[in-house]
Image (cartoon, rainbow, N blue to C red):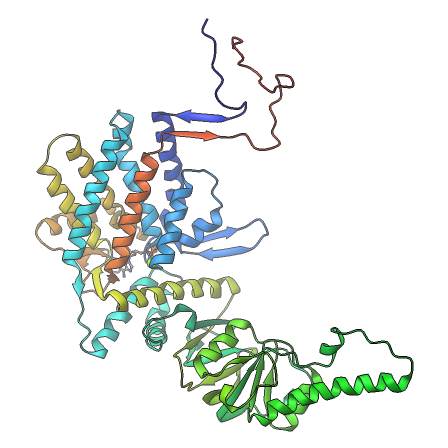
Length: 544
Ligand code: ADP
Ligand code: MG
């Protein structure tokens, strides 16, 4: 009998070798199955209820993956690539998961038959390289000559990004809004300069784009009604000062022994507040915004002097106002003067649905805009916001990279054909592997068909034939249940989405293939049961 060697702590779970690899691949497969049906214009949405009972309806791959709370260590890789795709380009999050899963599925038989994972990884890397070169070669650059051409291009890309979302029926309406919003930004296209506000009620078409800053009216005290609600050419004081009586009381301890002295303290408090208010008034501001509360006395004071005020303005809104209107956020009232005030052409408080909004338009400085979304249920608005976020990211990416490819599976079919042709020119295992990856790429058009209820085999056959004849932009036509030239159909996507999605998918597949052993330490607290004080349990040379 051989003595057993104890290497790891009792309770450690290890598995290794081929079975481990195959089991990791299977785990990834089940994740792919969870998001598979959300792909494309006819994709379905998922309703996910988390531990707190909060329901989310979404079509966005990254959002779904995040909410799934996956615990399988290998399968988590897929969550990460979805997240990275979301952060990098904003769209294509379902595609990236699907591609990674399908690459793994296609090479699984080879792994099972004993092909070394390193060989498989090498083949995937080679295939990826070929695909990258081809995309860069095929991508159509749109020259930035005319503004109207660029606009048309951007609207098409935004529409394609939105066509797979809940709001696809309003995609023409929203693609204009999204493009307007992004074009209003300055060259760096900072995402946080587009504010998105949601107001439940009304219909989606009542959503509007405010070129400037808008935020919900904050809590206000009596006296507020008397302040004017609209100004032309207004001067805005941005404050981080509490304009309330109690403010000073917290900061000091005072002992008094008669009422007169107490009265002095109270008077002093009022005086301090009035001094602050007077300073603000003297600066010439006619709108006062503060991050901290503005109390009833201050509200009344401002109202008497025709000044509009709002306290407890959310920090991000205050910052956006500062960037848009200029000026500076002041933390003391002493230095307030005309130079630190922001300017804007037009301020008003307007009713939007059941909410009142403060709108600042015609801001001279940085460029910013705010989308006010209207719509029914809250979950619906949240999904709308996520969809618009995708579209905004896509438009930004397209402005930066301005090259597009056709979507609807067209580019994937062309890459698949390229790889198949290439595989015929080489010999050995690599030939089979590259051909398998070529097959893997077909998952995108296949799933688009499946989700729309089309006969996928039939349509894929037609597509293969067309691509063999040189129709490089042919893809699935969702409206006609057929194939069509998706470049002419204007199903355009920035090439960067595809480049990023393929790279990330290939990387993830390689990573999962290169893991052949998982060692899981026992959880703390789950102490080994048997084996005495040393906690050695079985082992120690004892036969099993
Ligand atoms: P992702 O999270 O990967 O962006 P989507 O659900 O947005 O997933 O689906 C994107 C896929 O749908 C892309 O492959 C895109 O080419 C395709 N697609 C989008 N609009 C159309 C359309 N009008 N016709 C055909 N395919 C389309
Ligand atoms: Mg999308």
